[in-house]
Length: 142
Image (cartoon, rainbow, N blue to C red; front, side, top):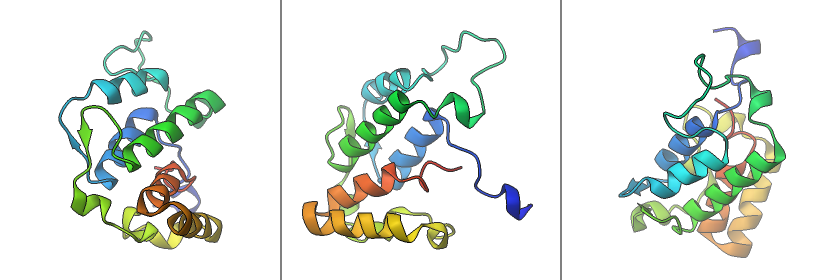
């Protein structure tokens, strides 16, 4: 692994949704809402028109409109307000913003993101902090 290439790729919408569901401890009972949001983000499951597949470059997914849908998904998931998806109370009870970051990548989280998540925790509680973490630049990286 070359250090200059480590964590430099931007997650595709599918990777973002799956990693957010996993990090949030979500239980998916019906994937229709998540699939709808994937479509809004430009990556509907199994419906790529191009035979070469979805683009793997960040430029394809860095559109402001797509980012807005990512943040909306993060907010809905963090507040357990996504149809067909339930975040159990034990997962909702995480009060430390660091709890949502993978233990291997916690040291890569910027001071600014930590400060924003801590401020969100004080102002809006654990759900607000989770939304900040899930929408952070660090969480968008592969």
